[in-house]
Length: 312
Image (cartoon, rainbow, N blue to C red):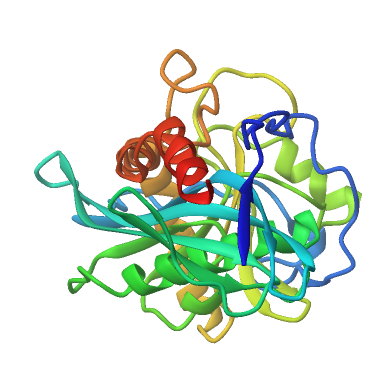
């Protein structure tokens, strides 16, 4: 079996999509809009007077990086594509009563993702990339394989460090964590539009700290969801808009209570443009956790060089 490492920087040509103008398409998900208010009574919702955030907020996020694109030639002479990837997940614990935040948990893993069979672990110095078999070698499938394993790390750390009365915020959809108590999914990139136009106008008219009424989303999964605008300078209609979600197994009253709690909690963590180009949606604790996790991944150039030496 032979390993060849592509000489190109694996991050070349990557970019982030901006969603300031709004979602590019309409979702086919089933939407029940009368959970909190009737559709004809929809309006911006302010948090109840006197409601305060929980004393402890736990925020979960993960990062991933393609360290090298590789080609693996098996004993039969067939060449398979692959990627050597590093990924990490962690939890930042924010003690709002004390005004402090610290990383409570952080884990890192690495893998060699390829459809090739029985690939031995590849060493890059004292670091090992463990074989992770992917059914197909298309770029999308390789990327999804890395994403799936990073998500598994995130799921693994999400149940740790919990205390009574805390709030768990997951960066991204809840997915396998919907069963966890007091858990919110935090979605800052809008791929599709879930609401009809007459209700979308409520989203785009929100002021900082306001949210939409809770609605129920249903596709292959069910979630209670709502939109919230974070504080920040006025801009495009969807500027500062995020979507939060919680388990559909909750009662309507519990889902609305979590929505109220999100409206007094999330704005406290909103970032500012001079600190973060993804402000205000990329919350300050998330940005700090991402920096720490990326540092844990190590120097990408050194790892690429070590992989090239191992292949040689």
